[in-house]
Image (cartoon, rainbow, N blue to C red; front, side, top):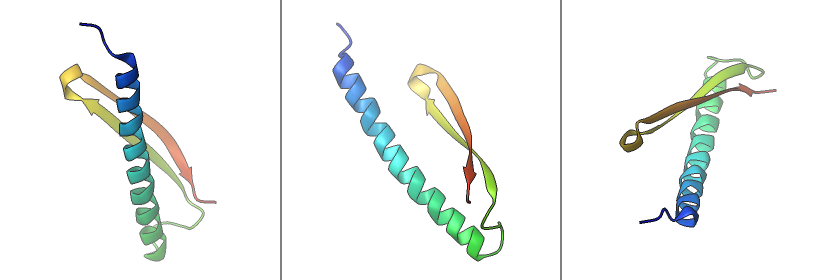
Length: 70
C-alpha cells in the first residue's frame, strides 16, 4: 500500500491550523492576564517553546522562539 501524500499533507495542515489558532488564542489570553496582574511588563520579551509529539512515530521535537510585546 502506498502512502497518500496528498491526504498526509492535508491532515498535517489541518492539525497545524488548529494548533496555531488555539496556541495564538491561549498565548494572547495569558499575556493579557499577566500584564494586567503586573506579573510581566507590557514591553517584555518572553522565551517560548512548543513541543510536538507523535507517540506512534516516536517523534518528539520542539520549536523555540521569543514573544516580543513591543
